[in-house]
Image (cartoon, helix red, strand yellow):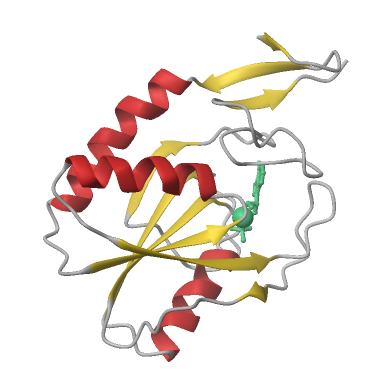
Length: 181
Ligand code: IMP
Ligand code: MG
């Protein structure tokens, strides 16, 4: 348990140390694929902390990725997703003939990742790998899996390490669950 400003208590699920050592392994797995001129695409906002740490872990494993950002919205109200994904802010770079690594925070229904893969494929990306921090098993509404995944996520609404509930808790250095009182 961790006590936050404002009196909320958060149960730590994956600590900063857990995340840091797992990201090192994940970067090694990605490096082992021998991806030529990798272009990392971080899906915002939820993956910005994960992406920032992962690209530096990739550097330590000899990779020199370019990076771009794609802001998607799944019309999430509170903790429920409506299913429709839209582009809030598009990429700057051209993905045609590029080897792309898409990074997202959580794979749940799969709609966000499937949308991103379809978009990049329609724009002519040569290869598309997907990498997520967390995967919620048994929550898929569409058939999509991640090529790389750091951790399994319990069936809870999680926050921290870039992830929010109503724009809060992104700053927490760990992945946690807000305890109900
Ligand atoms: P999907 O499109 O249903 O796979 O949902 C993926 C997106 O929903 C993620 O990129 C997250 O932004 C958000 N999401 C799903 N579960 C959680 C959660 O437990 N906490 C915070 N965000 C979540
Ligand atoms: Mg997200």
